[in-house]
Amino acid sequence: MGKDIGFNNNIADDGFFISIGVDPLRVSGNKLLANIFEITFLTNINEALLSNGYGGNGINTVGIGYDANDTQSLSALVKIAIDNTVSVMIPDQAQYGNLIDPTEKLLSASIDSVEKDGDRVFVKINVTPEAFDDPTDDTIIVALPL
Image 1 (spheres, rainbow, N blue to C red):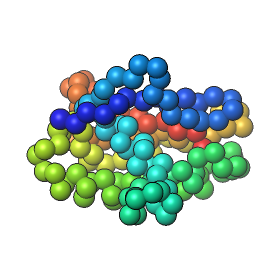
Image 2 (cartoon, one colour):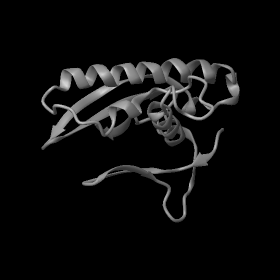
Image 3 (cartoon, helix red, strand yellow):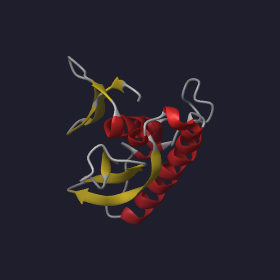
């Protein structure tokens, strides 16, 4: 089972940032998968140091001025970034076979919703693992501002 430092998304009036806080905790399972998915989704394929094409390029959809009423175009941009993310994460995980816990393996990801809130737009991405930490769970949502 993998371990990583947990982090939180912070969506404020002045922007979006990721924070590990003062005393970060180690995470594993579905939280680790959500963290890895989010970072991979946001990684710029062409500019990330040592990324070698690994990333979703979703950073190009976050914080850019959009017409908040054109959710169809925004959904299309996010879908491309999700597809990029899935296309690099699943083959990467396959290299490690059973060394990766099923709760940390990505099966798929899709847009859950694109919602307008005033003049801001938020996307919720449904991240589906091979197994859930809690058998009563049926989804993992990663939420980001656009």
